[in-house]
Amino acid sequence: MSRHAVRGPRRLARWWRLRSLRTRLTVIAATAIAASVFLAFQVASELLEVELRSATEDQLRSDSRVLAANAERAGLAQVQLPPYPGSGRLMRVVLSDGSMRTPDGQPALPPVSEQAGLVVRGASADLMESRDSDDDGYLVYTLRAGDGAVQVARAADDSPINEFGFGMLLIGLLCVVSGGFVGRAVARTGLAPIDRLTAAAVRVAETRDLDADIPDEGGGEIRRLTRSINDMLAALRDSRLAQRLLAEDAAHELKTPLTSLRLNIELLIRLDRRGAMDSALPAESRTRLLNDLGAQVAELSTLAAELTDLARGDVSDENTELLDFADVVVAAATQARSRAPELRVALDVTSVWVSGRPAALQRAVLNLIDNAGKWSPAGQPVQVRLRVQGTSAVLEVDDAGPGIDAADAPRVFDRFYRADSARAMPGSGLGLSIVQRVVDAHGGRAAVGRSSRGGALLRVDLPVAPIARLTAKDDTAPRPHGA
Image 1: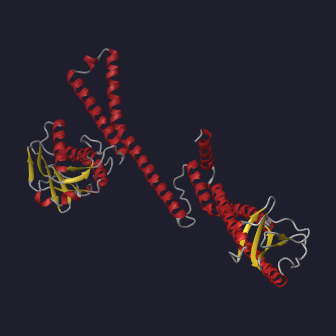
Image 2: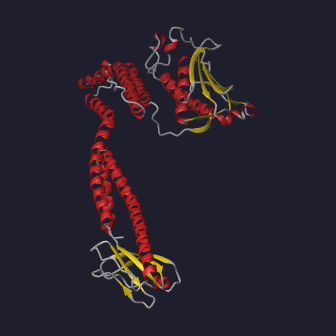
Image 3: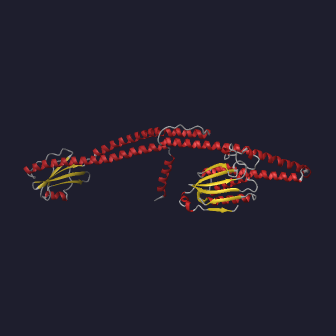
């Protein structure tokens, strides 16, 4: 196949893709009507040709029988042949010796065929055949008569079929044009809801007004599409509101540590410029100031990391996998001890398989342990327990601190929420919010209560993986770990 032959279909396909849906529907409607008219023409032409041939054959048989009857009475050599009318029917008599008689002035018929010769010799009674001469085609009927045969023929006349075809062509063109207009009107009417939907979507895109719901018009697929777009707008509204609240809360939380950090740095800069660092700021005060700066920088780093993690929402490149939650808890406890060597963690975990993202779950468990570590008195370990309860993996983290007031319990998982008693403690108020988000993303539930030691008890329930439920009874032995 040549390169030009390939380019043609490609250009046609590209042209088709660039057309509007209204134009496509119009072309499809016109093409369908044209194809229907063409098919109808083909079928009607075949039927008309068959009908005309059948009528012509019947007429030839009738004329042949009349001529044969006359020949039987008068003899083939003496029968009087009717004069040639100038058009239409042709006839001749074929004698047994091969000689022929025709009316005066009649055009010559094609020679007698071999099959017609059999009728003349009496080997066959009659024969209907199509014969072609130099200029015309003939339908010839040969009938045995006396000691020879009579032949009646009629020239093939395609004019009725041609006239019929011309009429069908005009009708077809009219139908195609009408079909184009009808297709255009149907497309305009059918696509009117989509046009209104498109205009509303463009208006929302231009004005950035996500509060303007698109009117629910039409039915079926149009209604489902409209509702889907409205659901998408609602999700975008919620997302934008959440982003705005996060930005406002983050700005509020960043204001205090940044202000303190800026003031301390400005103090050090002024003292350094005056050359009075040692005289105006004793070594003990300088050390305390530098420690404060380090703590503030660490607090800002933690806050920035937690803000980044919280702003990502459920977007993560980490794949969900089947994992042993006990391994995640042990890894989080090890990380918590490495960050705070003075922290003691008592583990009592049971192997339980869940479906989740390992890093996200480890971050949630680490936040729970860090939160408990801030409140647990010196010498009192943070207790971490993991067990299977029904179809849930239950993780409990408790401390021996003062506990959480009943008034604060409903809000401990809110972003940036810090109880009055916790404002002097380090932290950003985002740790437990991240826990809540991770648990929700894994189809679990987080709750807060009071431990038997009087402190806070934070509980997380995650659904056990289906494959693990089958073997839960055989794999519930605790796995103690060192404190």
